[in-house]
Amino acid sequence: MAAMIRTTVFRKFSPHTRILDGKYVQLHFSHVGRSKFTSTKSLYQESMTADGDTTTKHTNSTGDQQHSLDLSFCNAKEAYRSKTTGEIARGLFVFNMCSIPFLVNHNKTILKWSRKVLGKQLFCKIMKATFYGHFVAGEDQVTIRPLVNNNRRYGVKSILDYSVEEDISSKKAKEAEMKSCAPPDAEPLSAQPPSDEYHQSKQRSVVRQRKRVNSPEVQRFVAHEEFGDRREGVVSARTYFYEDEAKCDENLQTFKECIDAVAGAVTDGSGFIAIKMTALGRPQFLLQLSEVIVSWRNFFERFAGDRNKFSEEDFKTTLKDFGVQVTRDDRKRWFTLLDVTCDGEVDLLDWDNLLDINTQMGKHLVVPNVTTGEIQPLVASLQMEEEEQLSKMLLRMNEIAEYAIKKNVRVMVDAEQTYFQPAISRLTIEMMRKFNKEKAVIFNTYQCYLKKVFSSVKHDLELSKRENFHFGAKIVRGAYMEQERERAATIGYDDPIQPTFNATSHSYHSVMEEIMNQINQRPRGEVAVMVASHNEDTVRFTVQKMKENGIGPQDRLICFGQLLGMCDHISFPLGQAEYSVYKYVPYGPVEEVLPYLSRRAMENRGVLKKVKKEKSLLWQELKRRIRSGELRYNPDKVPA
Image 1 (cartoon, helix red, strand yellow):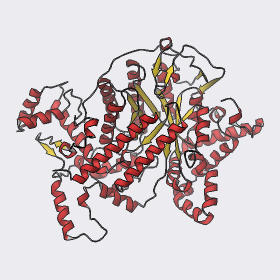
Image 2 (tube, rainbow, N blue to C red):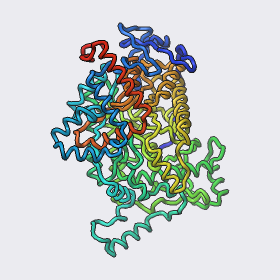
Image 3 (tube, rainbow, N blue to C red):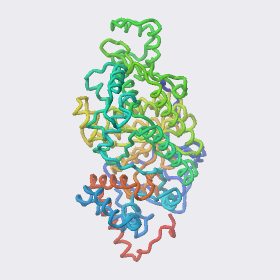
Image 4 (cartoon, one colour):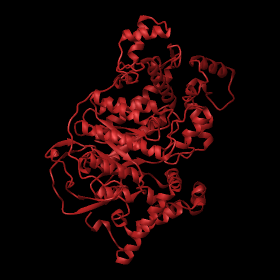
């Protein structure tokens, strides 16, 4: 996998008026024109934006209607201008139900029995009038368009996701996980008791594996049955379990259909889809590749020390100091695996070579022994079946990227658990190197609750600069905190999560400051980022720093993202003030998105303080409409 980075330094915008520390002020923007805070350096400058479209910048153009951004996010009228009174009443009902612990804790059972008692037709009708109608856009590409178009009219774009999930038991989930994280020959071929032949086969499989040590760092990248159900402790992220290659092909087709849906609903190139790599292949490979990457980084840190760069002769001398005896040919191969620019990455293969059908990935799954410096194979060899499965996984990812480019849609690769993430992030960066030459098409996701996130972001920004490709990122807090903490404590490796909520917020803000510094140091559009956060303080911080760095909302370099049905009091005021805002918009048949709805109910229970504010604002707007005689308010008949 690849080496690292190249690019140039460019413009510096004149800073806009600063937001006074500790105080909220209103920023005034024209609805259809440019911000009043427009840098004269952007006069008539055409650039590729984070929204993916080409825009022509003008100085001080104004529209005929202005919307003010209240950074306290307490303006109920502005927040719900896009909603009918019925939608406001529905939102109040849904959030009130999500505040009742008994209903939330037993929501799966209640939904199951409601379906049996009411029958499919009545059950679906009630769901569409309540929870489904609030959190899901519709059943298919046709029925979602009214909501997508209405949101767009009020400044909010869409990230579409076909949210059909299979609701399997925890036992089946663990069985699927353990099977998919082991070599194919390590499992019996049928449900019958294993035969003597199977035991012999399993022994051969064990011989194939590199001799494992019981250190926590090694066990970190091994599947453990007690954590086999990756849904446990996770309410805000979807989980895929590997069934077989046919299911991965089915997931590929689903992602391509989502791309079609986005292309049909959003024609200006600003659309996104989100994918997970665990949907596209056997997670065994993500575990193995993650271990390879982390092991090489650890070895590199010990080997390189404080040096900024080193030569092959330096490498030879250091190996000798380690007491490592290798042949000249082997030494050259190990040297090429190290990144000579000393940023700790392993140059295994570039993306095109990864896709080469003649490439044998097994020979690249090697790790250094930090104590001896000896290079050891992670597995003695990959079976032909494993090589084919890994190749298909990479080809599926490539097909998604090429299809998205063809349809003018961007792709966000979601982050997952830390034992998968090094591989996911590295593969995503390799896709960026290939596909992000002209604009940001592939976006990597960075989880700010991770202790090492700042160094990861800084490294990848520098990589994109040196290798001359566009950097695309989605910045999130993180979805797997409870699960990650428990797994680290049980297995014995260092907790990868920030110690406190405030530490995560500080991490998030540090990442955003670094990204904005890079935006101002590089040509327009080379860095694009989505702030995917429901946290008001983080949104306020970003808006303030955008002003201080001369980044206007109309520049479309930084966008914001929230879930459909949540945080409308943040999304719509931002959108109506001309900031680039997206809603994550799920769709699918009622009965097949019940697991998604269950997670939304659980998530709202976990953020009662935020839900309390949303309920208060909804009730405030409902009362205002009653008093002013606007119960029949129709957002389609008023200027956006």
